[in-house]
Image (cartoon, rainbow, N blue to C red; front, top):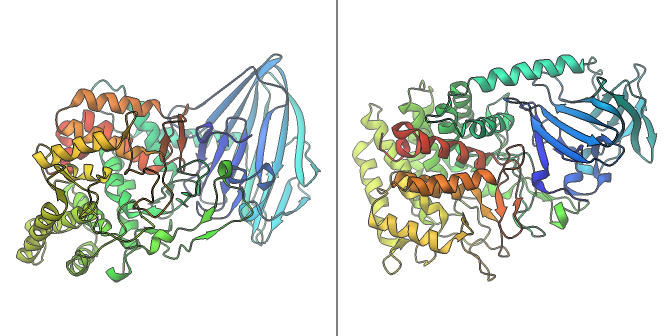
Length: 603
């Protein structure tokens, strides 16, 4: 039976990560990187596409799970009639081979356990050659990949599956260590599961203890800390790039075709990431992300992309996996992302704003940063009047999206601010550019009949991305045109309290895809930000608390929420959702130092 998306928890080592189900099954693991092929792909297919289940043999009376406070160490407890048992799951942060460490701990009585290990490399497609190594470990090899399992439990083969049965009594601790390594190299040395566990506990607690507390009564500190830990888990340690999610092809609408690969780094996340990390006290991570961005976009602006691989790779060719049935039948399953070839004006604004924020908070200037920014501005001057694919990466025709034009204004505005602060550049020319873009948006992007800015020039529909107008300082939050736009979004795009990206009524929509998707969670956080900025504090807090209630039992959010079914949908866990959570919490408690006020020009 397919688990709900919220029935999963994430473990990771800042190189890759895995999803562990409430039933004790690891159903998704890509090695050695976030965007590598999966050796467990049951999440998007069947059990025979690869999984690693470790759970009681008998029926559980109750199941509880939680992360150890301040860590990414997952503990799942099962209560049975004859006893109780715990499985502790984690991945050690390392400089070598990735490994999943699982420790079975007897809590009460005696419990019979079962292990089922089904290894299928290349996204559940390739059955490996499995043999027993002379050291006693089980080794599975196919092509460049190798997994080795070390455990004191006797493991044997059955129907292309490695299985084991064993019992644990109170106080017993039984380790399982599954390590990936290149098949052409020597097997890595055996790891001590207990040492790994103790080391991971120390590492994560030291990292999370550095989190700067929120102002106020601290009621949201745990939620913010858990989101920051999740963001750290989605960071590719060697480069500092933050991937959008751990998964590919978890659907935005169950059974639909809106299934995309999110295991890459989006420039649209840059400013949100910088604020979330800097305001929480993680300057090293913020600097690493800024430096990743500079390396990724280096080169001619005409080759600018909206997303890159974890190390800055540009070639992210999109293709489909016909052998996987898709999550709850949601096909196709896609690898790669064709949006990398789209043209989006808004990323010019995101990059310029990110580097502006870094400069304003005193982060040391990169040697090439300003040269890059000037080159981006030269390119923007020649293309800001072009239609683009928009923030939502539509697969329909290009349009003059209002949010895109606003972010083009952000780029020009931040360039002006930089020159006024002492950098060299054509100040008067960029001031005129900013003024021209602003005037055009106010003329062509505003619909007087609706008293609202619209999704694109000539449209009557609104778009949740228009909530950015006051948040980036395009217009004050109390400007009548902004007030009207927010009111239209509240009226047209809210579904049981949450905010949709844009309307879809069953007819062909602006994105060129069949209508229907969940509420995009960051948009609801943005509405809370706007309410907070406009003084509607009680409304903002109420919406924020509602969004917190949508997290799963271990504090994780996907990309979207299906309000009709009461389920999370989309890729998981989603960095954008957790970034929005962190920043909104700061906005509601941080006064003039918060991201919304700072970015909008209020401080």
